[in-house]
Structures are given as C-alpha cells and as structure tokens.
Length: 255
Image (cartoon, rainbow, N blue to C red; front, side):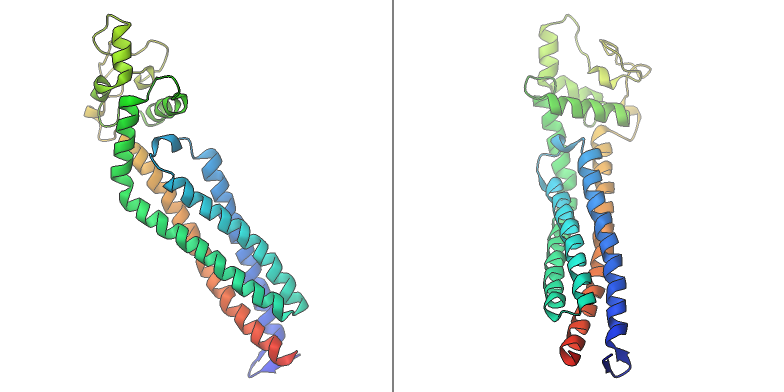
C-alpha cells in the first residue's frame, strides 16, 4: 500500500472512515433534534411573530439530512479509493458546513432580537387575537403557555383588561373583569369568573416569572441546544474535510 513519509494510504483511509462514521451519527442526532423540536417542542410557534425560529430549525434539519447522505457517499468513495467520490465528499461537506453556518448566524442574530420580538408578539396576540374566530391556534398556544408556566397575561394578569377578548366578554356578561380559565391555579370551566385573588389565579405581580419571561426562557434553551449541536457537528465536519483532502492527495499520488 502507498506510503508518504510515515503515513500510509490505508492509515489515512481508516481514520477517514472512523471520523466519517462519527459524523454520520452526529448528523443523525442533529436531524433528530430538528424533528423533535418541530414536532414535540414547537407548540408556541404561533406566538413568535416571525418564521426565524422555524427557519433555523429547518436549516438544521436540512443540514443533518444532507450530511447523512454525504457521509454514506464518502464512506463508499473511501472504500473504493475513488478520488472523484472523495473529492465529491469534500465539496458536499463544505456545502453542509455553509448551511449550518447560515443557520448558526440566523440563530445568533435572532437570539439578540428575541426579547423585543417575543414581547411584542405576545402582547399583540393577547390584545387582538385570543379567543376570536380564526385564531384558534393562537388561543390554544396562550392557554398552554399559561397552564404550563403558571402565569397569566404577558407581564401581569391585568394585561387582559386591554384585550379584545375581554371586551367581548364584558358585552356578554355583567362581570366587571375576568381572565381566561387557563389563568386558574386549578383550571376548569368558569373558574376565573371575576375572582382574581392569588388563591384562584396565577398572579405575575406576586411572582418574578411572567408568561413573557417563561416563553423567552423556553426559546433561549432550545436555541442553545441547537447551537451546541451545530458546533459539535461543525468540529467533526472540519476534521472530515481535512482527512478527505489528505486522502484525495494520497489516492492521486499512489493510484
């Protein structure tokens, strides 16, 4: 088998196969995180006010899936010692790196704007969309948010006083003020009727965690998971890029 200096073609090929297999596993994990985020952890998408978060997850999905295919292509090329397939692997894995780099940049920029964007979107959703016809998904998302994070309104339960939902309720009821039943400590139909005492509903004025803070923390945690996954994948890709170029040169030289 060809040898250049102290490194043989078979040795470089072996290391390339090992790291490409590891990269395939990482790419599969990246794809799995993307699917998990979209399917199981995307229940508040309608409250975000933009598609940036979904775009970031989508790029991670695309990068992970494409990387899995590229790894299989590269493994076959290395086993056959085909310089064209190894070169193809190099070019395609660079494309994968670019896809994930774009996704990482978008996630980083979005993270900086997350506070103002989520605050504005949540406030507008509560004020103009909750409980109204055609906004069932937003209504369901708000109810889930309030139940899961034990909060009421965006910053305080009094946020509901300014909502279209409250105006609609006040026209159909003699009650002066109420909040959605999802604000109740023990949610049930009609549980929040004109009873805004801390023993009955979650009062954000008595707790440092409001619905806005809860939603922001939720999104930041998921962006952090996405960021770590992309960094680990990127490091493995860099190693595979270096090994693929090394392997390509040895194949050209000794074949």
